[in-house]
Length: 524
Image (tube, rainbow, N blue to C red; front, side, top):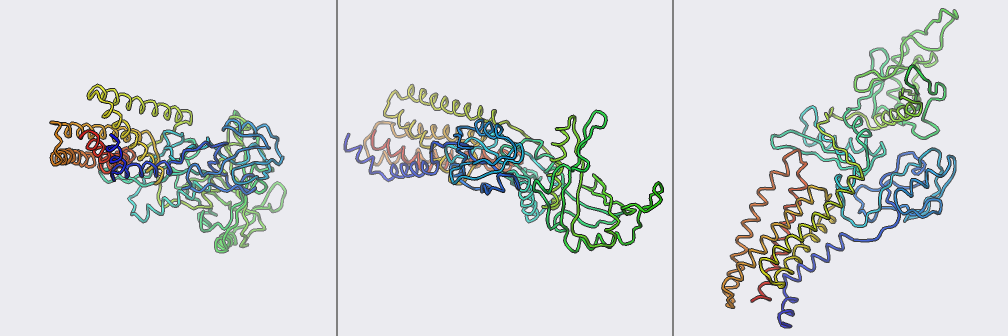
């Protein structure tokens, strides 16, 4: 027996399996994390001004900056964080301690602009199904080239980043009949936050008469977004009208010199409005500055008479908000302002997008999915163990098959952590399929090699070879069956297909050879 164990340890297939398991554990990096991880930092918020950086999109989960204390109070979970923040009054400076440094943050409103979530304990990235968020399936109104799709995705990423959303996955997808789609997944965001932002092309135009004087994007040099430059218009404030409340926002923009000249050319021929009530000229011109968003007029502003024919680069933009209560109207007004500011900065999308499907999953439901997926996976492995035990009635066979199954799961999760692949419900289904095919292959190896119980070396090699011919044919069948699923359903089955292909590939080239080596050495 000692001779067999030494031979087993020295076998290159067993060594390869052990190396892959160790590398996978390093990639997964299981750890006990304290505090809450920073998901995103709202642009121009108190946290942003204090110097807290926006997390990089491709950062490893366990490497994310984490908040471990607020005002010297230990933060254990998300509820702790928000309770501490809400308990601190407005216009106070607080200390936010993270894993990198301590920041002095001035709380000027109800929030400081940090979005947090439970600190990851591994580098395995959870998909939308398991952490909560919103998935939107969009279809371009016109057929786009691959270059235009790249431009569209870059523009969308910029727009969502400017809006203050991170943990964004934006990818193109096609179905089997050639339809183009854009899949957007945003963790921790609600459907209302992104639906309007993505569905609209975001074409901003300012017109005087029927002449466009400037557009969002290239014509805008600067958009004011800080608290002292933008917000609810103090001149008009909020007021009730019928059953609803109305508020107006205001912020300033800086035009390029070319856009300012276009405005000067459009106003130099206008007349100053005469006010018959006072018997003298009013302070504004005969035409208004009309604001259009996606070809719909959303507001109009009087143009001061002193701006006639002047190439002014500083423009004040205002707009409305409405709600059932004053607080709702303020919230709606600020939301509209934020969306308009984003469009002014990023410009319009190259093409209008139509929403085909939206899925919104709460973080609570995501946690339930994780728990249920773990339970079902353990039950599946336990069921396989019972069946194998009843079939062979030998621990020397049943235990290695279970170890091989667990090895496949560890290596597959390690590969996912290394390449940054998201594990969602579809991927978990793929893992279970890979485990199932692995057990089938190990049973084939066991049955083929135990036939006749011969000790002839040549026969043993032939038996293993015959088993692997069956395994390779089954592997090719699975891969061929999975390839169409990568493109089917606008790419929504991609996780299942790719995880299954990676899983069975790991099994065929790493774990199955190791198991066959074990069978050959221990049972021959």
